[in-house]
Length: 324
Ligand code: ACO
Image 1 (cartoon, rainbow, N blue to C red):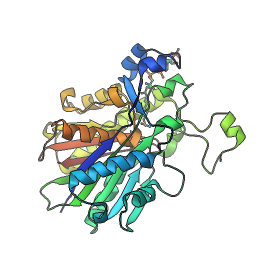
Image 2 (tube, protein in one colour):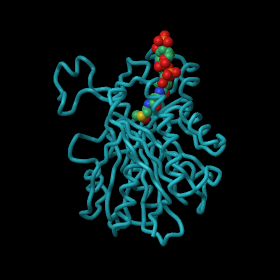
Image 3 (cartoon, rainbow, N blue to C red):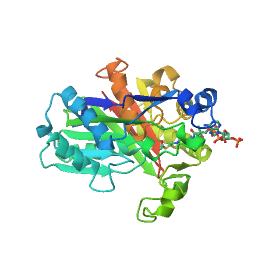
Image 4 (cartoon, rainbow, N blue to C red):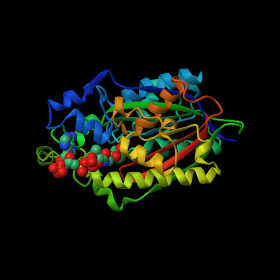
């Protein structure tokens, strides 16, 4: 028996923030952003939109694509680094909004790897007897981005993606996964204030401590190593070679990280899905947004083998290999 993807949906807000727009806000250029990150534009949530609002639209699309109703769901798991609020979980807000039964609902915090972690947990629950699990990746990083800091504000965008994961007969579905973490370098990417260590105060607001702090070049090196490691270990666990993979869907953080990871796997770039030029780094939404695009544009078909790999704050990383 295997857990398989029965439906998928995604959503990105309408508002587009281009590199030209950012040139007017900070000392940067389209040339710098494009050559250093590969990003040309990103989507920005409206002021009144929270992570659950984006997730709700992606969920409705995923339910439709799977041909099931909210009442059929067996669990809801949301990977997010930017929940609507510290508590309750975004998953519980989704449960209410879609009118799902009183099923288990919880969030997973694993930075940008949150969506893959959530999928890995869903697989375990499916093997334990659950069915029809709604797995979501939803993030609004723009609300935690310092638009006076040119080293981070050019990178992030907003979005959401959702999957319906079902119990299958074993002919298709998740073949293997690998998850890891190393908290020793957490300071390289974090939001200093707003948690129990440094609760919100006038001082934390004045010092701009409620936004993303990142040492990009250090994170870059760790990301390349971790994403490659995740890919190799996930493939090895299923005894599948890179040449058998139809499409690699990496977390969309930086084109140079993606290219370096693909090179280490000896995978040509035409087997790698890249959409960060249009969305930037959408954290947990990046992989499901890309997967939805791969399905809709016909880049993958039923029976194809797909490898997804991610890296995020924590640091966390992981991979999921599946037959679509
Ligand atoms: N425009 C113009 N110049 C800039 C900008 C900008 N937007 N940002 C930085 N610079 C300057 C720096 O000030 C520096 O100038 P200096 O040499 O005079 O000091 C120079 O460009 C080089 O800066 P670096 O940080 O070394 O540039 P780098 O090539 O490393 O690229 C980047 C920066 C794009 C952030 C890259 O390091 C990166 O992508 N890192 C990984 C980020 C990442 O993946 N994070 C997410 C993983 S987890 C998650 O997704 C949440």
